[in-house]
Structures are given as structure tokens and as C-alpha cells.
Length: 185
View 1: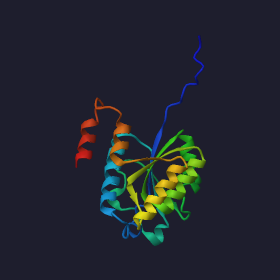
View 2 (view 1 turned 90 degrees about the vertical axis):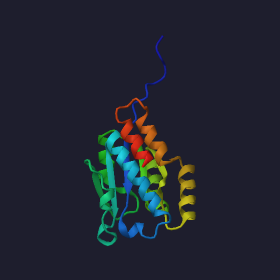
View 3 (view 1 turned 90 degrees about the horizontal axis):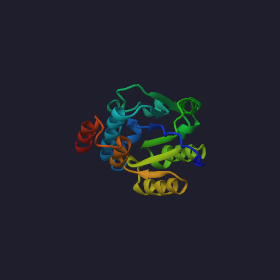
View 4 (view 1 turned 180 degrees about the horizontal axis):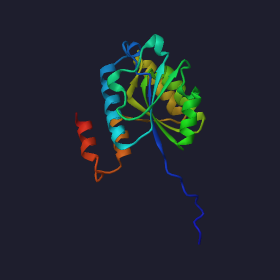
């Protein structure tokens, strides 16, 4: 008897690091903890997976990505004027070309560029994982309301440590010791 359930194609992830630029970060509520979590996520992701995208909102006026938060492996940089990264044809073409289905999102500001990006990416059929402790806004209320709105529209809200272990999948993985050290530090 033939299995009538359709085989699910494997998921493929991409990390989207949105607008971690000096002038955007300066007034952010709880920025030191958020930056630390973005660094952990980036370090672990570079060990466990590939497909990293970094966006910069109006870099001429808002500056470049903080150098210590730039990936050490190859990545795609997207400079944008639209608040949503999903407006980038280059990004969408690359995601389609690589058959990426899941997007892991972190950065700034939750209620502006991240929210608009997430909502548009959800509309385009991507599964979007929002790393709640690796993003922020100037006001905590804006951050919290935005998380609720993205959740209501279908985003998955999670944390840095949770997503790192989810990508790692098993303690049998040869990279696990490195991952454990990233989490502990």
C-alpha cells in the first residue's frame, strides 16, 4: 500500500540580521543584552548553517553594520531604503534560488523594519522565526506589541538559546562543544 501523505521537503534556513547600525542602536532599550544575543546567534549560526543576510537601512545617514556583528563567513549585504527587507528583489531571488523556506530574524527596530519585514515575508509564504531576545526597540512597549502582532500573523516567537539548540538538533553533533561554549559565555 502506497503512503498517501506527500513527502515533506527538507527545510532550509537563512539568518536575517536587520539593521544593526550604530545610529539605530544608540537609543534602544536593553541594547547590550540584545547585541550579546545577536552575537551568540551569529557565532552559532556560522558554525551550524549557512545563508546569512545582513541589511542596512539608509547606510549613508545611519551608518554601517557594527563591525563586531558582521559575519566572518560569506554573507549577502542588502542596503535598503524601504523599511521591509522583503522589498529587496535581490533577497527574494536569492531565497528562491537556494530554496530557503525558514527565516530566522533578529536586529532592530522590532516595531519598524523587523515587523514590516516579517509581515511581508509571511505573506510571501516563508516560515519566520522571530528571535525575541535578539531584537529591540527604543520603547519596550513598541517591542512587545510588535511581537504580539507578528505572532498573530503567523510568526514563531522564540529565543536565542532555543533557536541555537533547534538548529544544532543533537549533542552528538561534532560542533556541539563549540555551541555549548557560545551559550555559556
